[in-house]
Amino acid sequence: MTEDRAVRGPKRPLAVGGALALASALAFGATTPLVQRFGRGVGPFVTAGLLYAGAALVSALAIHGTEAPLRRRDAPRLVATAILGAVLAPSALAWGLQRTSGVTATLLLNLEALFTTVLAVVLWAEPIGTRMGGALAAMVCGGAVLVTGGRAPSLDAWWGPAAVVVATLAWAGDNAVARPLADRDPARVVLAKATIGALASFALSRVDEEGRPPASAVAALTLCGAVGYGASLRLYLRAQRAIGAARTASLFASAPFVGAAIAWAMGERAPAVPTALAVSLCAVGVWLHLTEEHGHAHSHEGLAHTHAHRHDDGHHTHGHDALPDVEHSHPHVHAPMTHTHPHGLDEHHRHKH
Image 1 (cartoon, rainbow, N blue to C red):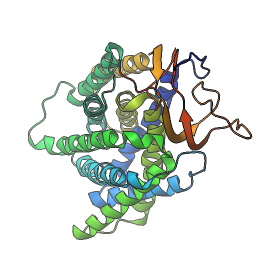
Image 2 (cartoon, rainbow, N blue to C red):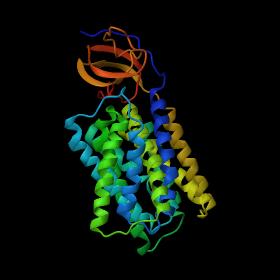
Image 3 (cartoon, rainbow, N blue to C red):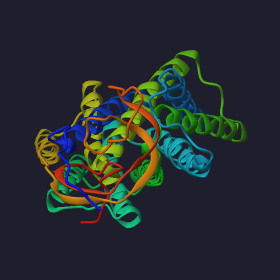
Image 4 (cartoon, rainbow, N blue to C red):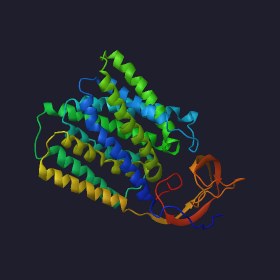
């Protein structure tokens, strides 16, 4: 039996999740040209290991008890995401950054959004409307405009960009595989993934006989990892929890523009007309995302699960001896209900459209 309940909460939940995705993009995009600068002469596996060592350190400091913990059955998924996103992707990116310009590399990262969206539709059947399709197209086209800039690079010049594309494919696979982990504690997820990735990367660096980097590079790359991989990934998982893998990845496509701006500030040149056009396209894409609204009558089936929640959102009506007024996590049961309200693609709103 269903009942209609009034729902309180964010009036525009897609915009709230979008803001988290943009914050994640800002943290990641800002560090990409810095990784290129401080990673010069450092092996790709050592670079990946230091980046994720930084991510693990900052995540260990952010763990608290209000989120759902990891479970034993999450282990295979964590290992898969670590291999894809914490070993293969950063190693390929580090190798590519040493063989192409910072602007080209950071803007090629736009492809991650396209690949992630395709995987989210195929694997998770996420609904992609006209508005989101237009936003994704605008942001990817903006990156393409800046990458080409009216030039046709030689074949030899494509080895670096090709490695960056491999990195985007690996991160897209990571995003798709990790989607169920978004409902767990983001700090614990990042700590586990980063620890596995760092240890594997350092082991591969020994096999490949990569040299030891100077202390300055170690410190700089570890700090870049803490911000651009640790803090960024926690924000990314929280955004993915709220708006799904495809929308999070599409908004994350703004990260290359942040990286490109920093690369230009560090001395790299870029043509004026392509730059203006690309920034305009990116702005259109962000605007389409942040102004997206979604709400309709929908039904919830009975469900028992564990995740972080509050009791003022219209979905969590179970009782407590002393009702907490803050976010908390424990096993709880949902009764079937039908109602209408604005919603995103969080754990309770992954119904078919």
